[in-house]
Picture (cartoon, rainbow, N blue to C red):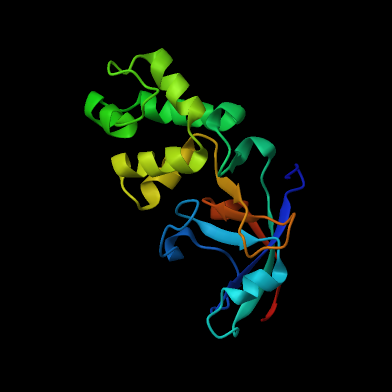
Length: 183
């Protein structure tokens, strides 16, 4: 869960730094193009190849409205559904076809009702994957989501302890470093 006070999480890196920089993001993983964090301190350190580097304790200064849940249907996440509807409303017909190609619950004519229903039934990860087929698998999809009010994704990693979650934050201005220590 998140609150107006944010989410405390951990990030491990071989590099020492004083702030997170969106320009340093190298690849998109599970939840998109962003900075990855976990609530499990030991799991964060496991992401370091040789377990040497720095462990960052951070606060993700986000509200519930800025958070997407990776495996939940968009129909259960009104804020995320609104973001995807706003993004797809800007698409031309060819982009719309690519976004919804093969989605059985969207009609061939791609009318507003079918599009809304199709988005409601998609999980965040499915919608993100389709969005990336339209705009590319780089920071474009993350930027579109950020502009539309979604800047962090929550997901569970099988390696994390039960009840602890991982996060992908697209917006480095939302990341406050609380502590840094040798891993």
